[in-house]
Image (cartoon, rainbow over all chains, first blue to last red; front, side, top):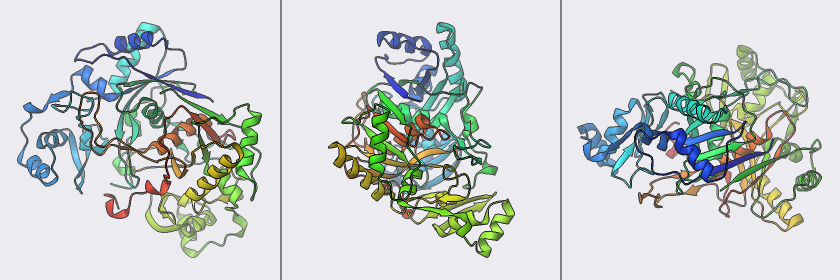
Length: 249
Length: 249
């Protein structure tokens, strides 16, 4: 199927309590890009964190001795390290100046997702939303209420990964669609029956949005059109591999 | 930027020695989808492996005792395990019925990329191309010769990953563009200077193609239009994190 991704700009600075569904629908209207059935809405978590008030002024953070020691070794801001530790349930790796944690949600990423970019120039840090699936669900319901349309919502962040250099976008919150397409048991055009082919389509959709929106251009929202998603009650937390099934922890 | 992905169908069964550039250009012509400057060509490795003759009939494989023991424990075909071992330089994990290897290229993936799907119904296995960057470069030059256009080429496979369930597409071969977009030192719209933000755009482009082409529909080629890639001599092997820099091996 042909796939189209439309970045959405002209979104005003988001403040705590701002109604995201309204803000996004207004921007879409201004851009003359009305939502249509079949569309998927992809949103970077930064504006969700801002709307939900999960932004912390660094001047209010008192770093612990542990955070200060680690930060000093690598030239980091100890207040950011303190936030990363507070947002983590477990340290995964702490080497080569990289702090990989398992967040309170179970996500494995750098600095627990605590990030100064696209916030306010460096004096405040955005945290990840505490329940990104619920955030996605709220936005999904908000859009439905205003438009009558069923529009799946994906909330994204940029994560690194083992073995491969570079960040890619991933889905940290999902509502309104399945997160995997399961090809297990289906036959390819040659009649071969596929095993264990579970495609993480919401992570791939996050990547589409990452490419279309870029990182420096205040386009935190993307409409993806043309992908035949499977409607369902998918949640991004289903993507987090349970520790018992993971070969690498 | 708006991003568009066009899957390309009507590609005949590829045999060893087939000229891939010609085959793809013919299919594009039939689909009335002429290449344009700025387009990126994404190709699943399966047709590259077929064209280069890296397809092995399982009836010609003699599994070792090691392969037979492992296969028996998990109900696998020992001949596929034998091929996976032969294509590997190192066993990464061998647990829970999953065989994760480091391939001869240094890629970390299941079964060394040895795969029976979309080959011939289960009697033959496709191996990964031995030098996918060279394969991409060959195709890139072939397209240039026929059309005069500089069209970057990405060769893909579907890989699993630690911590997260499900497969996503990744780039295993690249030609004609940089593999990363480097935002390090650039300022976001708020004036904050980004650190270490290296985006693996070719992996994200591979994901776009994965969504547009699907796995069961004989559409092994995708044209991606609208992404402002950076021209360069990028190679997918740059994405493979050197063991010394990897926190997880």
